Length: 391
Image (cartoon, rainbow, N blue to C red):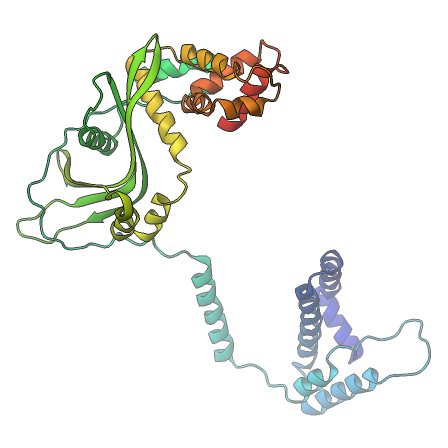
């Protein structure tokens, strides 16, 4: 019986599996689940070999096999050069299985295989994406039409050598999609010109969430799309080749469009009330996660400013390097008695902020300057801080 059991181990390749298990246990010895897994591995290996041996034995022969297990599991005094391990693991449970062994029926095996296949299919596949629920609402009246005005937004250059290539690419890029154009048009239309000096108007929108509503009516009504996000509007004038902000608005909004065949038609442009109504209005109008973003610390705002400045540079045709150089000189001028760059940033927060708003243009200019200037002087260290901020 012992030899038959050990031959079953060899046929199944169990020594190699136990070596692999022991290596993994040695590596992950600190993990309690590895010890549990190794214990069950040894137990299952022995049980499988027991079953392989007794499968063709009679009841009397199985009884002899069980007696061999019991006899070899008993403690024997003295030292042995090569002790047998036949009866060391889970002896009591193994003897019970041997005595009460019944060959598994065909249907039990079949059901087990089918159950394993069902579990595998359930856990190895992903559910289908949920469709946007359709909500039935009465048709909107007195809709206001917005004529989309596509605006090009240039790709931000990363290094000085790429500025020319980027500008050439922009000339051949297709116009922005109709929805982006409709959003920009809605923001510009809602924000009337206040300052007479404003000659350039820009807008950017950070979307937090959106909802699409389908109407069930006769005759059919077009779907409506509501976008929840933050709208930034900036107006500029140009003096001495430098952009100057003349007006602006930064506020969470909900913009609803009717999805017509010819484009997007503005249905509602909503924004919260002032003062104590501000937060409650947003929480009542926006979805929960969108409301949290709208009332948070606005980490997206810098990117919105950079998009508006890029639009203004593109529309005005000014050279951004002129403004960036002027701002760098102003940033490094006060306080003149300090050598700590942070003192200059604290003294000139508005100037530093303007440099970050130029975004990729500032990155390209500072990269080119640092390639030919002393990076250890004050100006070089200020440019390094800017690059770290914009990276």
